[in-house]
Amino acid sequence: MISQVQTAAPIIQRPQRLVSAFAIAAALALAPAVATEARAAPESFADLAEQVSPSVVNITTSTTVAARGGPAPVVPEGSPFEDFFRDFMDRNGPGAPGAPDRGARRSQALGSGFVISEDGFIVTNNHVIDGADEITIEFFNGEELIAEVIGTDPNTDIALLKVSSEAPLVPVPFADSDTSRVGDWVMAMGNPLGQGFSVSSGIVSARNRALSGTYDDYIQTDAAINRGNSGGPLFNMDGEVVGVNTAILSPNGGSIGIGFAMSANVVKRVIDQLQEFGETRRGWLGVRIQDVSDDIAESIGLETAAGALVTDVPEGPAAEAGIQSGDVITSFDGVEVEDTRGLVRQVGNTEVGKAVRVVVFREGKTETLKITLGRREDAQAIPASIDAEEDLPQSSEELLGLTLTPLNAEIREQLGLDESDDGIAVADVQEDSEAYEKGIRAGDVITEAGQEKVASTAELTTRIEQAREAGRKSLLLLVRRNGEPRFVALPLS
Image 1 (cartoon, helix red, strand yellow):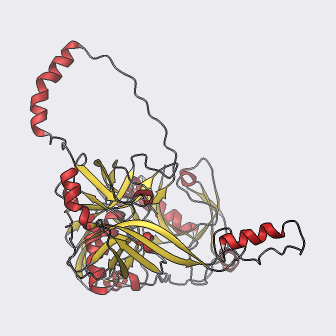
Image 2 (cartoon, rainbow, N blue to C red):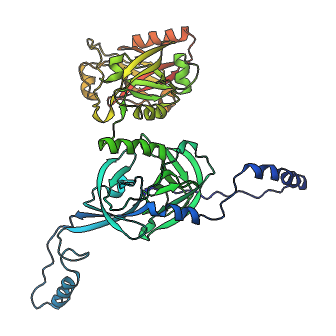
Image 3 (cartoon, rainbow, N blue to C red):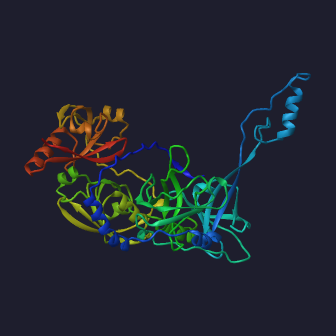
């Protein structure tokens, strides 16, 4: 079953505009030049469909599920309904849909996939085969084989299967999906709505789409994709797989011309690991990060709002190498970091155990650190420790639109904090303040200001004065809520 992103899309209408005769003449004059640059539309997809159809498969899964509980209805002997219920049970049998017998039954689901090797490796979506007891592969010629699961990756919704065949299978190659362009022709093949082998065509509508996953890199297409197309290939005009059809955006469950295929370059990396290890092994840096906004960049003296701002450093590779909360990671393994999404994907695609150079921006200067990556799948998030200090007397003060009070034993208990946790508690937030607009709320705890720890309103006031003296327009605060940290830059005016 194809994944759905449910939404309701408005109909956009564009008014017609009058075009002058001069504009028409100019357009006609330019038309030949434009036509020579654009690739002609294919006359037919028949040759391509014939070429790749032996490599595309239909997938049927069978799963044992528990039926609804409860005993069969008891009908009094001699009741006028006795014959009716006896006929009903005989007709449906134990475990049949609608039968009073509540025993276990078999559930089936449909999907698609494609062959990537002569010796029987097949790629599909994880959600197609997840929880299946039996997986049946049907080829274009009608042959059916039973498949075993080699490995799965729920993060990218990819699964690798294996079948045993007496004759070599016909594989299809992966394309370099990074070279796909918006507007390129593509063709989808699969088993939509269980109707059997089917072909649809369209273009690449967009690239680098992210839906919800950490490692998302989807190709968007207007080629018709429906339930049952899940796991099927999206081909370019050379018969190469540019993506694995995975999701649709639809208000009704059917295709409206917005489909998503996980890009081939992501799939290739996953498949290589599943073939070698039976599981994924992604690099792990060991930091919590957030994007750098314009005001955050200004508050720390960073020229451009780029990179990944470190909010916390639990025990792990980064902590061992000396990365600190408040650092901005600007380069990883020789590649500039644009934002958090790019960094997460790059780290995940890096070999576990590799020693990489990481450039950080810290206190107005850059510093290069060498970090040996761990394995993300084995990582356990352990909160970074905060040096304990003595409890301070409680006193509230209003600063930057916030009513603040230092932590003491009573407040720590109310907020569920440990004795070692320190900072300033937010007691109230003015609703017309920048702090409120940026999401600070009562119960938050400010642990750093200007990338230095604070445990009292006096210390926060000092950080404010220092920022003003340095010509800063805003002050960077590290705010924690339920243990989760994030940076917020508040204006000083």
